Image (tube, rainbow, N blue to C red; front, top):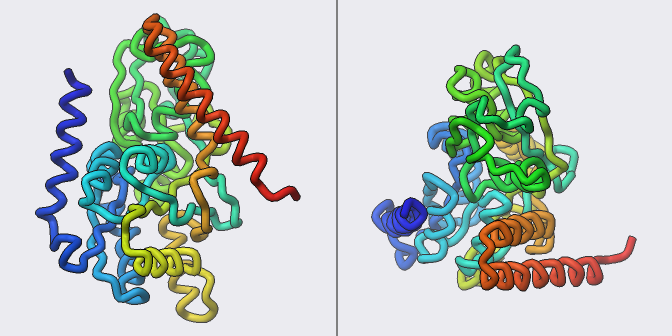
Length: 330
């Protein structure tokens, strides 16, 4: 029942974007931003980049801050937004469900594509270790991220809990799902014992609220995860797509005062810039997602669900193999 309610709410949330500004027919490009932190924090770091996007392309860009990742995906599905910044798992879902395509991927200041990690955090001085987490026994409270979050839910499940056949609902006394920022606040203030987060979220906290960030510590890190992407609807005017792509892949590369300004904007986002990419860069996320879906189906014992999930998993693995075969040999 709750799952059905959340989907309906997400759809309505997406549809309500139509009332937030002029329609796309009026020449507006609605740019969706996943609110991994609170909207005020996200607006502060994204607005300078969007201002530059308007100035350099002449496009009438309007920002929309999604309340959660599902509403962001659904808003693109219902054509309420045409482009946006999507986390990796949400990018994958936008491709599958919302006619989205990857315009470019995020890179870090060193030019690396995989720039962040999922983490488990606890209050500093609590003495809680990863071994304590894995003992379960409903001794601790736990905070997961958004259901569509790569680092907040998918990676911790794929790397920590599923391989050990641990169901968080059975492992912890309380399980809550919230944003990275809310989870960090809860752990720092002793409301939750353990929570998921990511290295970018920790970096933002250290910059925005260093006293609070100093109250938490990391007890587990995932392998490197594919970063977020700029996603665009496939049916957007090709000329507009070209303008958007040119802007993003060149942003931060100019010399002189303009380049210095753009690099400062990127630094506030904890980014080094944007690199052209296609969906193949999401292969690690696609594999994790398909594996988790298959594991859930197996636990259900439903033969139909298992067969369907196995077929989907095999298709994902075949796609990944094809991507590797097509990749340039170094």
